[in-house]
Length: 158
Figure 1 (cartoon, rainbow, N blue to C red):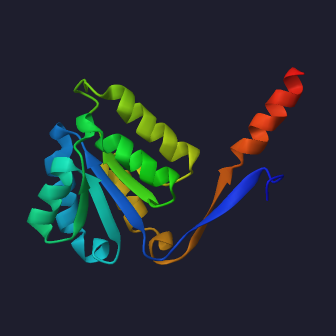
Figure 2 (cartoon, rainbow, N blue to C red):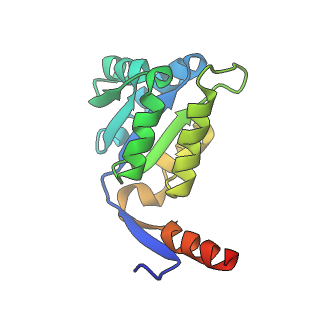
Figure 3 (cartoon, rainbow, N blue to C red):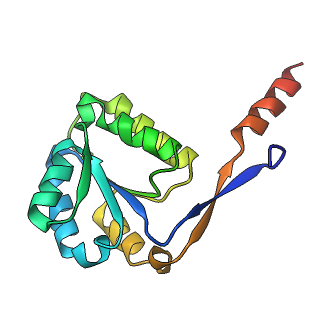
């Protein structure tokens, strides 16, 4: 496994889904979750601060809340991705509003790509993902073996 270029990770039938939305997108996120609560109720949900609370209040779905994004919630979600505890993320970010914690947002998106988890950044993609054949099946994802990549880069530098 240490010499493989990629490491396989399995996403189970019940997905661990992170729900994140900037202020200008919270209503869209809550409405989307309410519209899709029959599908979402079969999965484990978490989210940042106010977004998690609003979804839970409106839909009745259990949503584990972390800190708000600017107070470290994005980083908490990122840590859960690294730990293998999040399989899928819907992150409705507002492209028309500057965010004071933009570096945290970029770090969260980067770590989601590094760990090869599905990410929806708009409702159309979220709909496609939620209604995909993979939502009710096990899925194997491939993550680059970065330890091997780093070792190879070090060897090239010698």
